[in-house]
Length: 304
Ligand SMILES: *Cc1c(COP(=O)(O)O)cnc(C)c1O
Image (cartoon, rainbow, N blue to C red; front, top):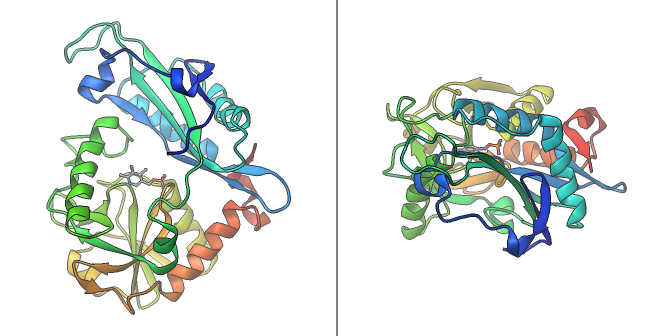
C-alpha cells in the first residue's frame, strides 16, 4: 500500500511509521474493535469531498455501541479528524480507515480497565477489485464458509473479529481462481460478499438481501436511493444461489468495491458475461454523484 505521512491517533497526529501499539493491545488478541471504510473523491473543478461522512460516523458509533465500547471522542471530533487527516496528508482522494480498539491493560476476555483508543488513517487506494473489474465485471464464487449467524456475531456492526470469516471466504475463492466470494446466510440464502453487499437484476427489477443478517452498507443504501430516483424498482428480499445464477445482471456494492459488476458466479455466466445496462447506469450515476457532478445529491458530500 501507499504510505501517507501522518495518522491521527487518540487525538493527535503521529508519523505513519510511529503509529504503533503495544503487543498486548486487547483487540489484537480477541478481535473486539470496530472500524469504518470511507472514501474521498476529487470533485470536478472544485476540491474534494468525503462521501456520506455523517452516515459513516453514525455507523462507526453504532458499531461501538453494539460492541459496548464507549467512544472517547464526539462525532464532531471524528468528522473533523477525518477531514484533517486528508488535509495533513495532502490527499485529494483516497480511502479513510477509522478504527476504535481496546488498548492494553488487562488480558482475558473480560476487558475492564482497557482504554478505548481511536485511530484514523488515510491513503491513496484505487479500485478495490481492480480497474478492469469495475469496467468488465468480476468472477465470484459461493464460499463454503457461511456468513455469521445473527446470534453468533453482530452483523450490523463492522466488528474487527467478524472479518476472520471474510478472510477465510476470500482466500478460499481466490485459491480457486475467482476474484470475490459470495457468502450464504445460515439458512442457505445469498447474504453478501466478503466486504460488499450484493444486488441482482431480473426483468428490470433490482433485488438485494434484506438487512437481517448483512451489514447495512451505505453504498447499498445509496444504490437503492439512486435506483428509486431513476424510477427503477428495488425489492429487499432473500434470494437463492440459483436465482443469482439466472439473474440478468449482478453487482457488488461497498465503499472499497464501489459498484463492481459480477459477470460470472460458480462457472456460470451472468447475463451476457459483461456488465449489464442497469448496472452500468447505476455505476455511472454513482460515480457522477461522488465526484460532485450531480448537484441533487450535494447533501451526500462533505467538502474537505
Ligand atoms: C463495509 C461492508 C459492506 C459495505 O458497506 P459500505 O457502507 O457500502 O462500505 C458490506 N458488507 C460487509 C460485510 C462490510 O464489511
